Every structure is written in structure tokens, then in C-alpha cells.
Image: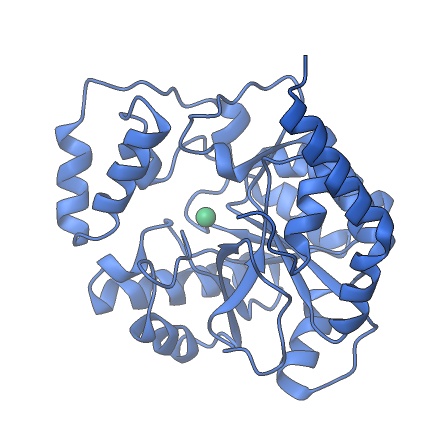
Length: 318
Ligand SMILES: [Zn+2]
């Protein structure tokens, strides 16, 4: 039985959705670009517990399809080339543009997201880790977090982990050996192969850099940051004969995971733009927004009415 509170909330959200308020909001923000970010699009049968440390970045396929349908109905999908030309050269875009981006390059995207994008002619951006292609593995932070038993414990561990130097992070992972709660499920942790990337490029999607190993850049020495940024760009360009001009910072929180040093290094490595992680209160990107800290919007664990509300500036919810 749904609670009274839930029914009341859904009624209010439906009333907002039907009131035309969202149309007004989109009209007001028609010159901004909505940049979406997704990580994992898993099969509907895949059960990810709500206290799993990756719950916030995992969306089921059926829910993803509803989001894509909604976005394609109310926004105009653009390509990365369109976005770069607008951001750097001031070229024009259609009203209410949306750019779809996907981080981490997991195989579930290839299986569950890409056919839905192709069906609707959406050309997306896939930020892949050049050092993990075709592999089944967690990133190093997930390896550490897989020793935590609950979401709360995971969040605490994540905060501690991301704020110490790289050598200490490796020592932390080492200390936890032997008490792993989470298993390396191929549904979540297998990465696309070179062939799959080539197929994506053929379909008009773009392959861009998410570094080599997905380390937290701010915890690395200068030379290691340079290597992560430079090497991933170079190897992806060589592998695919395709320009790699943009980067998504691993983890991507500007408070912890990257700063001025990383932005300068990204520029020096030849990137034109760099994207940060997800934010839930983003109104869309303006042309003046910092080219090396472009914010994106993502929400995966609420119902669609809630998603529409988050997408708008109406701050009834957190
Ligand atoms: Zn990532």
C-alpha cells in the first residue's frame, strides 16, 4: 500500500507537470545546454541494493528509456562537435539543446543504452578509461569501497579515501584485503572493447577521455596527472583515428577530485573542454561557464515526476 504522503507528493508533482510550468522554464533557459551524465544502465532484473555505494550511479534500463523519451520530446539532442563549436566559437544551437554523456565505458551501456539512443538518432559522448578496455574490474576506489558494508559506511570511507595522497590510498586498499562484501559483478564492471568502441564511432557517437586508470587526479603527483591526461588522449586518438578533445574528470567533484592544477594540466595536454561530475541543481550550461569545469545533470534513483522537478529550478525537493 502506498502511503498517504506518497500519494500527496505524486499528486502535487503531477499538478506541476501538467500546469505548463516546465514549458515556461524551458523557454526561459532555451539558450543553455542541458548536459546529462549517466554511468551504468543495467538490465531491469539486476538488483542493486539502495545502500550499495554505486546505487547513485546505476539506472535500470526501463527507467533510462523513460528519461530518454522525455528528454527527446522536450529537448533537441546535439553532438559533441555541436557543443564544442557553440562553447568555443559561439556557433548557434537549436533551442533547448541536450548533450548525452556516459562515463566509465561499461559494457552495460553498449547493451542497454546505445540501442535506445540509436533508435532516436541521439549521438552521445562516451568517456572511457583507456587503460581498462575489455577488462572486468572495479576502479581502485570501488575496490576500497567494496569492503564497506553499508551506504553510510561507504560514504564515510569515500570521503576519507579521496582526501589522502595516492600512496596512502593504495595502502588503505591493501589493509582491507580479506574482508570484501561486494563482488565484481560483470554486469557492472566489464568495460567495452576496442571493437565495441569502433562500432560506437561508426554509429556517430564520440569516444572521449576519462583518463587511463580513473585515479582521483587531485591525489596524484604532477607527473602522474600529466600522464593520465596525456596518455589517455594519445592512445584513444591512435586507436580510433578520432579526435579526443574533451575529458571527464574521474569522480569529478570540484571540491575534492580536481582543481586549478588539473584544469591547467588538461589544457596543456591539449583538451578544449573538461566536464565535472553530476550535480542535481543544474539549470544548464551557459557559454560563460568555465571550459574546464563544465557541470552536468544526473539523477537515477527517483521516479520520473521527481526527475522532471529536479530538471527544473523549482526547489521543492533537495
Ligand atoms: Zn568515472
